[in-house]
Image (cartoon, rainbow, N blue to C red; front, top):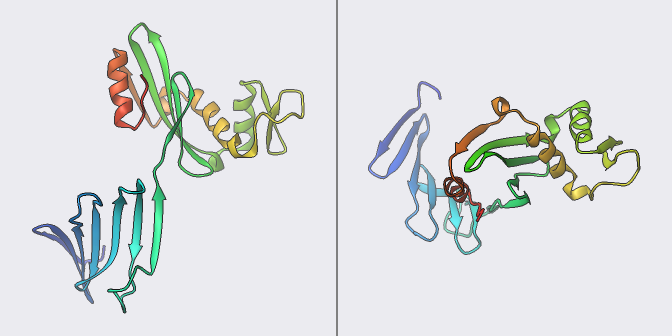
Length: 201
């Protein structure tokens, strides 16, 4: 932020003074569509809100020359959902190449260890992918996961990156995970998962 800009709060809003005016953020009033309005020099031009009807977030932008018309631009951000891939493993697809994996190990009766791992396929080298997937009995040949010693694809193209992400997460050491947690009961573990939008039991 430039020294000439000043940030301060006023009642229910956050205001930034700029050399040419004022940018202000205020909460939206509809409880079914919680969000934030952004105004420039007193004119509301941007709304970022949760659309409860469609269960997604939305970014709406108005033309500053015609702010009373419909939004000139709208981008929707769909709800991210988890897929159960094993009894104690869940995967969320954040994009075509980015995944979040929750992998849980049972250390003893009523003793669970959780690793929360973000995997970006584009950041992995070919050697990393090959060495990791070989442990699962697969080869990575010409960019395709195949059964070891064959040319038979393990899966379709749409799910290949997810399988690679699962393999990476399973072999990620706790010290390298984005987050770890230990739980002393299944109920305690389930409470954590519910907070992340996952129902275990």
